[in-house]
Length: 286
Image (cartoon, rainbow, N blue to C red; front, side):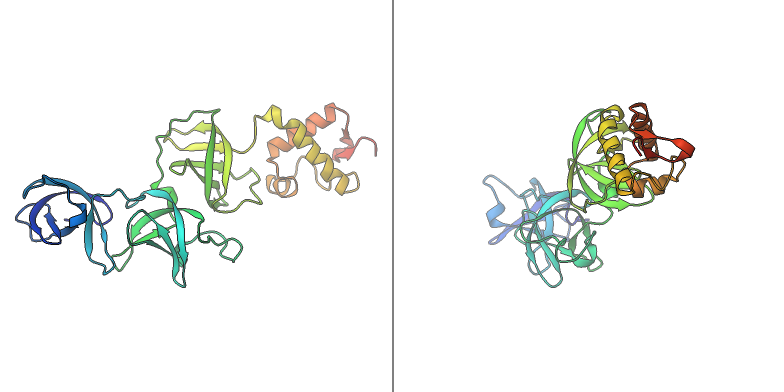
């Protein structure tokens, strides 16, 4: 069984003027062409050869000894070569470009945020219902690796590929490893495809990475405190909510998790910059 968009170990059945016919076995009737330009000297009938199979411009299976930039059910960062009425055509290192249909694009699809010629997009390769290879920005989570070399405390580079509001922000570290930023971290202002510098906070038992865009808590106290003071000033010196507010309200109003908010409030109180009379959080000079 020839595997489309995957590597196949095949045997040379016969040589033709236009190339060599390959199959799993010499007597197998299911054959694929390896063009003459791909042949090297010294090959003989019956020899084994490793090839990648894709579809040519007439949608016929064809073999190549070249290495594509992406294979089936694997993630890769590919460059947009053309934008058309049916989708984006991506360079995957082979003569026939790979289609990324519009319905397989994630994130905002207005003109400002749509990928354009020359942009790079993180995609996986799948076979569509018509049997043709295509690219998708969806379900990247399912094809990312969980064997990263990173440990807690390491700084890494990741690409946002999905916002999972119930869980957090999904990130492909180095474009191949599975990671997530928890939902209590404020990622407003970021878009699908953004590359961000992050800190590994935990390596889960299954190998997935827990990530944070924030430094260690004690390093964030000053900046978090200044943010809260600015918000207090915007409300005429008194916050309209207390430390007992829900995590959702605190995140919406301050961009901080409830724990980070309470740490910063405690820090400001110790510095006597705020008062907590009657549970209200006020500037100390008001």
